[in-house]
Length: 125
Image 1 (cartoon, one colour):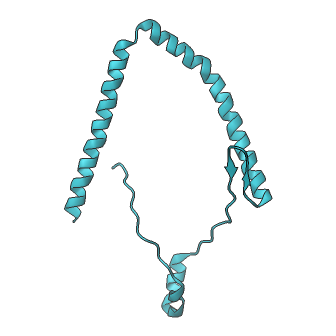
Image 2 (image 1 turned 90 degrees about the vertical axis):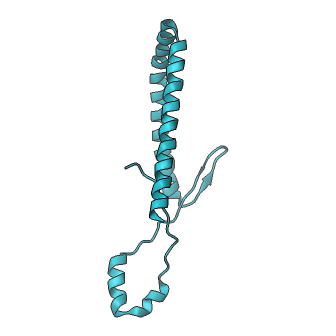
Image 3 (image 1 turned 120 degrees about the vertical axis):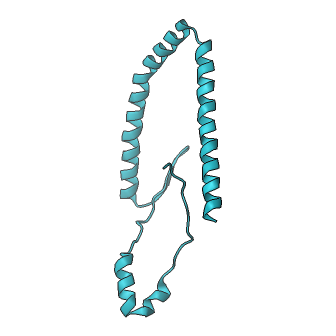
């Protein structure tokens, strides 16, 4: 079973590498089409919009934080015309290690224990 998963992971890594190579090839072909004049103009456009985008991003960050704080104080979700801020009750967590130790002496509490389904994530090595 482990070998089968290893093979699939290797195949997935191969597909990811293929995608990277294709994107590089695409970029190379696009770069061949662009004349120095077009490249220069694209850089000018990027420069022209960089400051504007940075200002808008800053406004967004500030206003998002204001909305979050206002919703926390309000204690409820609020729906706007295009966006909604969703208020969530704080999550409760327990010290599992300590409770497991406590359960060794008091096994009756294990009836209240629930364990979710296992899940996986794929990460680069």
